[in-house]
Amino acid sequence: MRATLPRPFGPVGIIDIGSNSVRFVAFGGSARVPSTLFNEKIMAALGKGLVKNGALEDRAVSETLEALARFRLLGKEMGLRKLHTVATAAVRDASNGPDFLRKVTALGLKPRLLNGAEEAELAGLGVISGVPRAMGVAADLGGGSLELVGIARGAVGEGVSLPLGVLRVGEDPRVADLIPQIAAALGKGRLRDAALGNGLYLVGGSFRALGLLDLKLSKHPLPIVHQHRFTPMRIAELRAILRERPLDEVKQFAGVSRSRLPTLGAAAALLDALMHLLGPRKVVVSAYGLREGLLFRDLDEATKAQDPLLAAALDVGEQLGRFGDHGAALDQWIAPLFLDDSPMLARLRLAACLLADIAWNAHPDFRAERAVDMAVHGNWVGIDAHGRALLGRALSSAFGGDGGFSKSLLVLLAPGENDRAIAWGRAIRLAQRLSGGTETLLRKSRVELTPRRITLTISPRFQALYAEAIERRLRQLAMSLGREPAIRFG
Image (cartoon, rainbow, N blue to C red):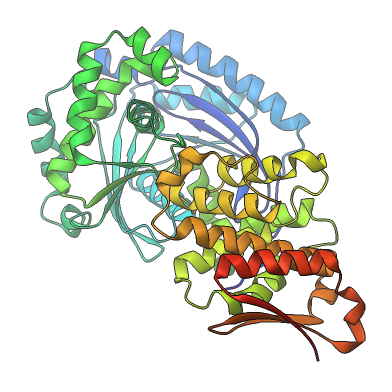
């Protein structure tokens, strides 16, 4: 498992003219896992008029054009290398859509109208970008349409676009009415069975808001929406809550934006229908969607193949480390102690090593807190709540103890994983102290594990590296591993 230094790109901007929201996002950082430099939206509800008379409402058009003029100015001052402007279902289906696009062009933008198949493809690519092993169906719910596309082995398959957006189906549609409409659009093709026993991956603001509500209601210890899993029984409970509780109470409790509240009932009903029809084994929320899919599609194959968590961890480690990146060497050094780590654990251990030097410039009393906060709450993808908890526990240990790590997160760990993460951290802590955080000196030593002891071997020429602090940290690591410590020069 290797982490390749991310290739810088950007800044790149995307204006996404959706049926419910119109959003401008500027991206920078690395190409594989771009960072959000700026993010602004308005809830113009362009698709609302389609239900009434098949046209975009004058009010919505006016609000959108004002926002687009602002977005264009912002993008110009940001020095964007490229600015994508895309429009989706509402503009695609509206009788006055062509006239609207002419007005957008007059602002100096170059809008591209996506067809339904391309919208579905980009949503699927967005899911793959953030959840590389995703397999099943991506469902992108917008104001004017619902896109469904098959995803497997890092590629998208066939997709369809249905006129079942949250602004079109009403605030509380009947699931029994939605199921036959979705079934008719899917027919008997492969897409109909793609999620069976696999995953259903949810894209779009209304689905994300539903995920946030579920996290808060279930009192989840780490309410981060990306890769949150719904359990089937929860959907019925959520629908009941949305019917029975005032929307203001839901907003106050869950922190869902007021503009999203009216769409939650429709989103829950559509999700209920999809689960009944597609039979997924798991239902997962994706923070990545069409915009990230647009960026991902433009990458070369080598960059697409990078692990998004490791690429981002490497990027952050390179920026915040003291003496350049040495996370991969650190992982190689401690790996002989953890040969029984599964591939999943080995990947998270490598991520911890890549982030092992990120808090050196914090106040000494709060370095653990800084590192844990980055691990647990960082804007990572390719990792779920369980992985974040493991990463946080390891870095808490690497920076000297329990600082910053909430014991409430321990419920996310499997038996034995807390002790394993502490051992990772203590191994990292020993390596960092021994080498001073430099790769060259680290390579002058090695560690070995036998049934009875852990042995630190240092090259005779560098015997001066050994000190009381090294002895103490070796002893702490040995205690974690249930071994006796030993030192050898040779």
